[in-house]
Length: 400
Image 1 (spheres, one colour):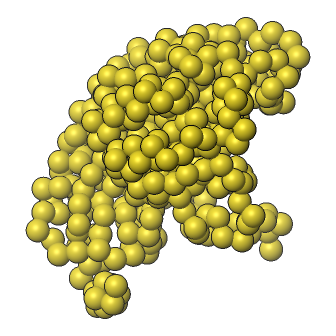
Image 2 (cartoon, rainbow, N blue to C red):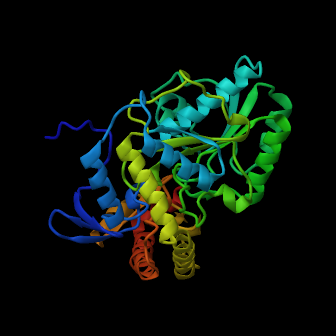
């Protein structure tokens, strides 16, 4: 019996070794990894440059604390500022902590403007984390259930609906910020339109709100640019990051610029582990490797080929609603819950995920080749067809 707290419905597979987009389990069985640790392993597994950099850093110093200067943290902040267009970076350890920092920035910004109870506009089907503040911001009752009372100060509207945000602006004078995922990951790979993002930027400017774009899952090159907002030609005021930032080393960051620059001052926020030398070595190495190996272009080309291949192979298949996404962030929505596809795919040596009950989620490493992308299509499509043909799945769909 394991003493690990029972908080995950784990698959009965343990991976012990990886190389590129491939994983091996304890028995030596080889799997194609189309999940990358849930968008974490940006450089895939066992990337030689990252392994070497981390080993060298571990031999020097792992942690000193934020009571002292950390040169690698300064380097990492410079890298993030350069690719994001923002001005300052707070380092933490995870996506929910990055979003917590964003929420605190918004509230302090509001108080400085004389707003007694600052509110943040958030979206239906969003996911921002599992701490009390971030699960309160999250648009999922499943995540929130059992943890009431929730944290106040969030106004929820439909995703991708600019008019709904405009209506909030007209009637709620306590709003100080909008927090939105440009692509909702946990919510089912729901892609915000670029016009919607531009419209949010305009609304925030008109009302002197902060635009806070949660790119924890969709950022760091996954869509073929460093960040989704760059496809829209805008800049946010606050940018929470994590997941792929350290290619597997736990690290998060909250970047700020525009109206949010300088809001947090000494003593306002902190983190014991955040931005330690090992984590920041991973950040610097990840960003430099993505740039030097031209992985943004690879994410675009392989992602387009993978999405097009799935769309073509599944066109007209009863039960397939849509294939959507950007770059190497792809969702296949079915007309019924399909969680059992995770285990079925594992039986066929393919690692994937199902989110929002009926969306197959693919988040491969940015190093995936077009040949490996074709292999994902060739493996997944027959499994989807087989699953949809099952009488139990058809009966479930008919009862919805």
